[in-house]
Image (cartoon, rainbow, N blue to C red; front, side):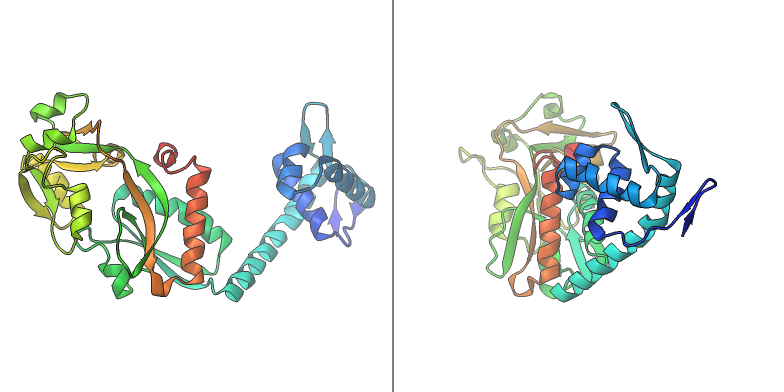
Length: 319
């Protein structure tokens, strides 16, 4: 029973589609957007609300040619049924997820701060859709990028391409960013508007040590320029955090995503874009033998999230 000061009424037998249309209109306050979200015609929305108002005996929405607003009774009805409807939807989602094997713990790895930011935001949407999943987000070591996957410490991770590993499945590209060079602010090339890959022959290039595949290292930390000039090789790093301190100390330069300037810029550092280097692309990757329903569900959800932001080239502009 729902009471008001001037009347009392009982809401009996509200069907699921009536509840969803009412709650959607209460949120959108727009008949057209409500029709789009609920997948029915705008006239169907109007008819459903009119039917509810006749059944209850009071207006739920105040309508003018310019706006739609909840009445006091409409607000009261929304407050009464929305929490219960949300709980029902959550339980349905849990049951559906359990039936598909999308339950338990899912561990997702990342390599840097901006990929962490992306994964954390994508995880919010995934958790809302699959409340039965407990997500763990953790960093993976850049010098042994696939060790955590193969050891089972993470179920999937976002990693820089290229990846050519027979036992790993590569998902769609989530991020694609221009390449830049991180160098000391006092370096002669720090004052340039852009640089060429050929310019690396005149610098000391930090590289990555450990169990990094040769094709990956050559793609990101080449030994020669496109014309064949040797590139001096500096210290091999094991952790991304080492890059910042080594560059600040003048020990070398390092190719990075241009988005890194937003996350790592500090006094003493400069980011100069390459004008002729390919972008750095990041994708989700997981062991092919463990491509479970929850792993694939997260990959789909993350891909949908990046598309909603405009695609791989636009993701970091909106985070």
